[in-house]
Image (cartoon, rainbow, N blue to C red; front, side, top):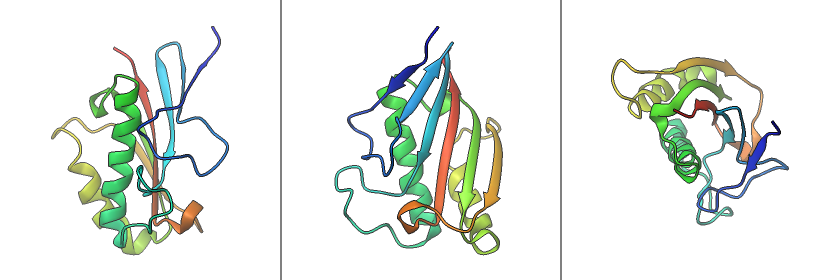
Length: 130
């Protein structure tokens, strides 16, 4: 079975050469989302990691919704922070608020030296169709 490459009209314009998601055998791999405005990709990024995490999670929800999925379908998350020591706690608190209590996906979070569009945070997902 060949993978299906998805582009979601409501999601932000990609900042690089990639699909919003690629699906194979019920597994959906969602490209890392940036804190960009889906309606205005040239708008300034939100200030601070809390606002950027909210925007990233909302962008991920747009991609999931465009595929008929939700955060409840997410099995694995990878988060990337440019200021790990400073922003880890705030990002965690903000991120956690998007999920049902006690039903968090598996996750990896790493500090990186830089992200596209000078973002403070980027998050990608793996989801599974029911």
